[in-house]
Image (tube, rainbow, N blue to C red; front, top):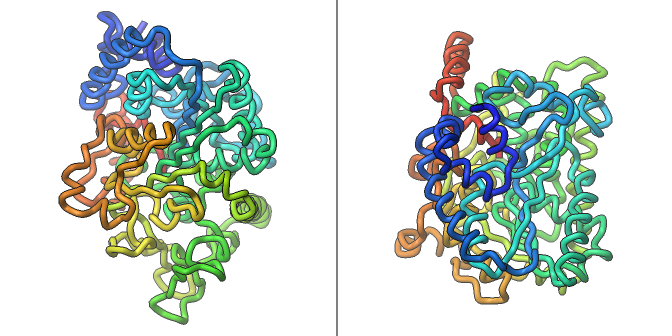
Length: 491
């Protein structure tokens, strides 16, 4: 029975999850699944959801689609059963996330996976939508393993379906993190068909130009807090290299990344003019498989190079499409970017020639430098998107951004055509009187999975666990000693 409660919670609607969290028979199972701190937060959200569902029985027609970030969609096996990302009970299946060489399906067809819903970390935002009564939303889960271009058709269908079902009212789009790239990929492929049906778009913490952390995971595999170390125990480097969608989050190549474009007003000036690779995030070319020095054979190197070529093309095409987009369409877009947290801003090789000993990670913040401030996962330079109507800033950590009341209230203002209230500069977001006024995330443990410390998001520590330590942590997963593993996101 406990397993059935957990499965129902992982695959259910927000209302069904709320009932399970509050149910006399099921609450203990959900508490064990989420961990004590996250469950306490979720229990409060569940009461809000139940009340909102009762208060707004006759709500508006569906008019809003929420698109989660990378690994924010629950993936379920259609043939073997169970949630495979990420569930303590089925963690031995994480390696089966590997894609085939073409990146079109799981490497083993028996491991067919489909996205079913978002993970619970987005419930604070979704509950806020339900409470308002002027929006009716659905979530669009997607298979984040595959190229975002492959997921674009599904999002197009969701937009068209909602527009047809709601009396042809405009459809608003709100995205967190990678979800924003999916919106842009969908509009790049289907814009002529979709723009007449779309209202406004809000990007929350979207890495429009990628994130150095992904390059670090590609080069050195997973590092950081204990949950990431355990992920590395179950998802091999070879499987990670097959995840084309994830690798589309690599920092955009020179010529596309902010500060490297010929017309950039914020040209990045390297501290050492002799730096081998002129990129704010890297001193090596992450789009050349040989520069990664992974000691791969010829076939594996060629396979990886094909994936990297696809990622570079994705960034170039996406930027070209954005530059060519009519300003009237860009005026429907707003960005909310997080600042105030240490982030992996740049990877530097420890010497020349490059060494497999590891990359030096530049994480210290520099005030007023978009290449040295961020939300703990995404540098500010990447979160900003030129030419959009509004860019607003908040002191917040990447995973928790949608859970900050000031953020989702500003999202609702934007969608309703009202004046946004978040600061218009990163300095304003960090000013003492404004920072103190910004409410804390509505569910910090639920959203983050790890506890931030000051300006440290809580997962930048780089420990090298022994096999014995990893085995002990692994055993602790079953007893709740590693909270947050079920909600693990690498970005």
